[in-house]
Image (tube, rainbow, N blue to C red; front, side, top):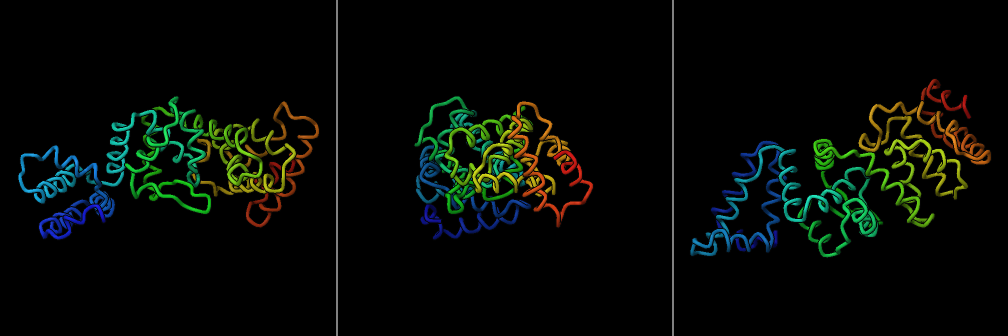
Length: 300
C-alpha cells in the first residue's frame, strides 16, 4: 500500500479500485493486490505513457485505470498475464527456470539453491540483481517461508498455472526433477535439511527408480534415512503432491521394484530390503492396505 499513498486521497481512485474488485469475478483479491503493489517502475510508466496529461494525480489515476483494464478476468489467465510479463522483462529462459523450479517443489527453494539451479536450467550466468528483480515482479505472489527462508508461491493456483504452462511449452517436469535431484545429491552437504527431506521426492518425480534404489540402499545418516523413508511412504499413500509424482505411476509397484534394480551391490540391496521392512513398513502399517504392503514385503 505504501507505493500508492498519493492515490489514497483521491475518491475517484477508491471508486475505480472498488469497481475493479467487484467486476472481475473470482480474481478480485489478486487484481487488487496487483493494483495496491504498483511501484516506482509503474509510476515511471505513468510519466512516460500518460505525459499528455498535465496533472500528476490524473496521470496516476490513468495508470491505475489502464492497469485494471489490462488484467484478465479469471484467476488462471491473471497468473498467465503475470508470467508473460516476467518472460518479456527478463527473458523466457531466466523467468521459466525460476517458476519451474518452484513449480516442481513442495515448498520452494532458498536463494542459495536458486544460485546453482537457475544457471543449470536456463543456461545463463547467475545475476543476483536480476534474480531480485525477477522475484520483485511477482511481488506478493512469491513469498519467503519457513526457518530456511524458502521462496515459494503464495497461492496454490499459481503453481497449477505454472504446471499448465510447462505442458503448453513442452517442458517435461521430469527433466526439472532430474536437475534438482542431482543438485540435492551432489552439491549439498549430507546434513543439509533439504538434502535430507527432498532428495527422494525428486528422484520419484524424475521417475528415476535406479537412482531411488541407489539412494535408499546407500549408507545413510539417521536424517537421510528418515528423509528418504517419509516420501516413499507418502508416495504409496497418495499423500505426495500431485506435481511431484510421475504420470500414471503405480506407487506400490514402483517401490516394490526397487530391490530388482541392477547396479546395486549386495550390501546396498540388503540395506534397501531391510529398510522396506523397517522403517518403511512401520510407517505404512496403520494406514496402507495389506495388498499394497505385500507388493514390497514379498520382494524385500
